[in-house]
Image: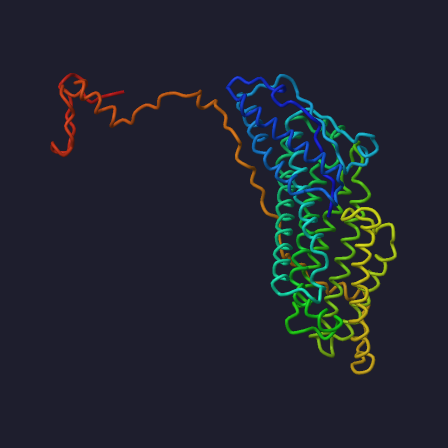
Length: 470
């Protein structure tokens, strides 16, 4: 998935606050990191989503976030005083309302808006970096010349890309559950509902989290299948019977069912908001709809293969039924030409990529279906259940990966309210006692003797109230 992230407009952070605790250097550093982030994102926008250096964008947002959290903490501690409500401007990319504007910019007050937009930007950069890594590999598992070493190395890249998506999913969930609710409380929900972009609502950010999690699970499935696909394509045409090293079809069906559930949830959440900022762009909604349908079709495919490979005579009819449902769903996806242009890659190239994937699956399902149907029609003669009957037997989905909990970075600098600048640290009590003893104060004169020289008990003066210190 490649989604252009929001881009901030230039702003001087030191000019938005009054520094009363000596944070001038840190504010200057924060301003520098924000400028770097803005520059990297503008370069990425100019190059386009396919050619941008998303790893550089991830680093730029990563460097800025600790300073942004520190500024927010200092404002809450009154180390930094707002001169007025600072207005931050971001160029948004998913709201239909903002896309109608020539500059697509949304200006809103509050550092909460700055934090929410930066976190959204960071998550989308992580997701785009993942997609770029995957795109660089091509269809490596179908290569006949790839060595085992190269296959392992490519599998590790797939794992790294999936991990990035899990991090992005956790960050987006944190944005939805923690950051945006705090923003709504600070500014007022009524004010935000009329002005904020739709991609910064709780529903849409959680929908994006589910989308990233679904894509991560698809990569986990791809890695699980890579070795068996490599063997199949290097030896024979993929199809029945499955090799002994092939992953369990039942497991693959459950994994795809979980992906379907994630896409379905994401699709429902993204369609939920009803704000004056419009709705999420058609491209993203199409991507979710197509991903949802494809995951469902593949789950039916593997349920059919499971029945055909290990179900015996009694389940041969079920195998034909499941695979027939899968083929019909895939052909419907294939026939919707306009929907093939998803966010994963834009334009004609994106349509070819998605269409090619669906076409491969149509051919794969046809091979399994023809083989099992031939056996059933000539040997087993089992009835083929109706789709409504089979859908009652759909098992629960199973997750391969889950979102990684996002932990906000430690602030780049700390509030000085609890510690007002450099000062001499008071000596520990024992050291103070020894100094007083040497001066003959409170001990009857003379140096304080150590415990080794006495009976283990300290001596007290003979004046009234000796030892009764307050």
